[in-house]
Length: 112
Length: 112
DNA sequence: CAGGATCCTAGTAGATACTG
DNA sequence: CAGTATCTACTAGGATCCTG
Image (cartoon, rainbow over all chains, first blue to last red; front, top):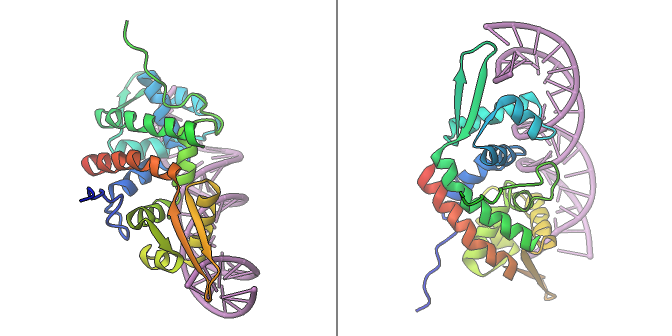
């Protein structure tokens, strides 16, 4: 009778669960902040990111951007001028996640 | 003209952002899995959790449960029988977060 | 300007044994 | 049964300096 609930995570042991995958991608110390800044600005340069994400180091920023790019969440566009210029932006995939993150954000503000 | 977007995270520096708060609570290695198991069973005993969350140790399970309880996401109900019995369940607050997590899960399955 | 390389620290998690 | 108490291991993250 009762409508069967959709289980939050069936494959608890492995990394098969979509939820775990998302948290692996977004769960680090810096990645949501980076996504936030890019989302707020459409397109952002490396130095601008380093100044905006207060406290981040080169190591962490470069590494996080690489991983986000590898995961298909940010685009890296390099202009071979002198000196070099690189612009980062969100992919369509990333943009489609933003509304859900906004819901989570509102939930957090209301409940924590 | 264009409708102004709601920013994902204004307070990037501090922990003021609701999104960061949520990730701090749910972002660990075990907590979502624990929430998953409890959510799937309504009410779960300690030993059942330890067997269900494959690979977790006593240390981590006890610690995670304590933090989840402190954050108001799980209820701890102790029966002073012999031997002791303890049942864990989700709070209303936690239940209100589940639908959002489900969305994230579906997004992860579709995009990762 | 946009990173890379290297070394180091610290918080997070695991193993094992024990207790009310 | 439902946890504590120690001790150890690992790895994410930090500091500093360097380069195409």
